[in-house]
Length: 141
Image (cartoon, rainbow, N blue to C red; front, side, top):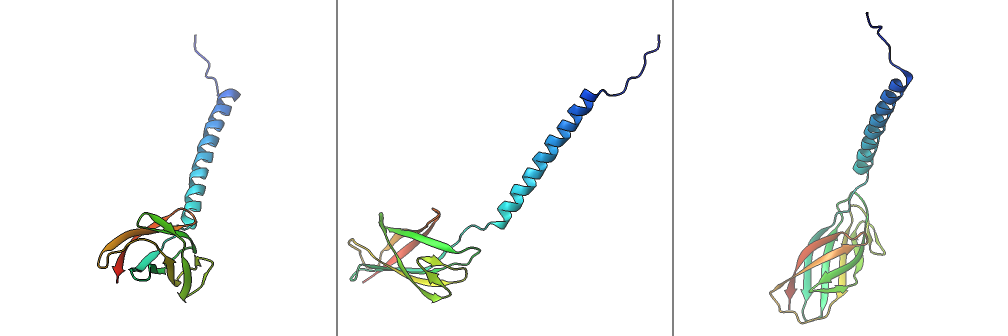
């Protein structure tokens, strides 16, 4: 007896449509998150120079923000201690510890401790988002 060929039932069609829909949503989500990640920039900061004046107990930093976003400085850590910076603009805009894109700032902090001239002390600038940028400060007399 010959068998009759039967077409797909509505349940089979529903399963295939559901699988295609799940794959389409997954691909769409991947493309969306990839696009969003590429449009938001991570803050960067260059520490151009770092000096500690042993006689005045001050830390002097020269910072440049190369972009792509403005950065807000939270604190500076040097010699295992955390200090607050005050910054002034050399070029560009610096306001309330926010250094705009392309700006150069001169920042100072009063530091405590015994500093030996001629040595280098490791430190890092910490941004409000938690990112840190390491540097080595030269101790001057």
